[in-house]
Image 1 (tube, rainbow, N blue to C red):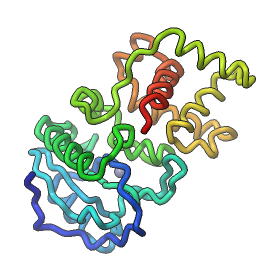
Image 2 (cartoon, helix red, strand yellow; image 1 turned 90 degrees about the vertical axis):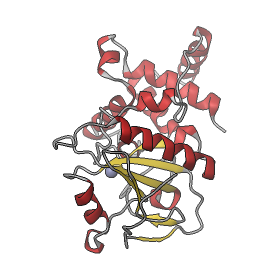
Image 3 (cartoon, rainbow, N blue to C red; image 1 turned 30 degrees about the vertical axis):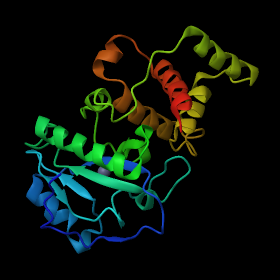
Image 4 (tube, rainbow, N blue to C red; image 1 turned 135 degrees about the vertical axis):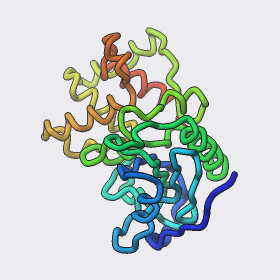
Length: 248
Ligand SMILES: [Zn+2]
C-alpha cells in the first residue's frame, strides 16, 4: 500500500502502552486536501489524524500508527474515555457544504484497503470500525448520514447483521419482561449502552437522548429503511443480538 509521507503532523504523543482497538472515521469539513493537510499539521490547531484520504484516493500518512493522534476529542466507547490512546483516526477530504461533498469511489476504495490492512495488522474487531458520531454523538455528526456504511459491510469490513429468528427476538423480549423493563425508551438505552454508546446522561436529558438516537439512525437506517417503516427499536434489538452473538 502506498502512502504519501511528505507531510507530518506535530500533534501527537505517546499511547500510554494501550493496544490499538478502534478505527474512527471522520470528515474534515474543509475545502480540499491541501487545506486539510495544513490544518491537521498546524501545531496551533492541536488536532491531527493518522491518515487523510483525498477525493482522488491518495492516502496521506500524517502520524505514525504507534503514536497517539488527536482526533477524537471528548468521547466515549464501551467505558473507554481516552479514545485517542486506543484508536487510529482516518480523515476524509469531504465537506457536506463544499465542492467536495461526495464520497468518491476512489476515496472509498482507498479507505477500504486501508481499513483492511489495519484490521489485519492490529486484529481489530469488525464491530470496532466507528464513526466520530458514534463516540461523540452529542457534539459530532461526521462522517454523516451519506457515508456508505453499506459498501463497507458488503466488503465484510464492518459487521453486517443477519436477520434474527423469531424465537431469538422472543428470548430478548422475555428477558425485558422478566426484568420489568416496560418502556421502549429504557430498552433502547440499555441496548445502546451494551453496544458501547455513551448513555450516562441520556436518561434524564431528552435533548441528549434525541441526539444519540439521531446519531444511531444516521448510521444504521438510511432513507429507504425509514420509508419501509423500519424503526430504530427493531434495528437496535437486531443489532444488539448480532453484536452479542459475534463478540469475541
Ligand atoms: Zn471527526
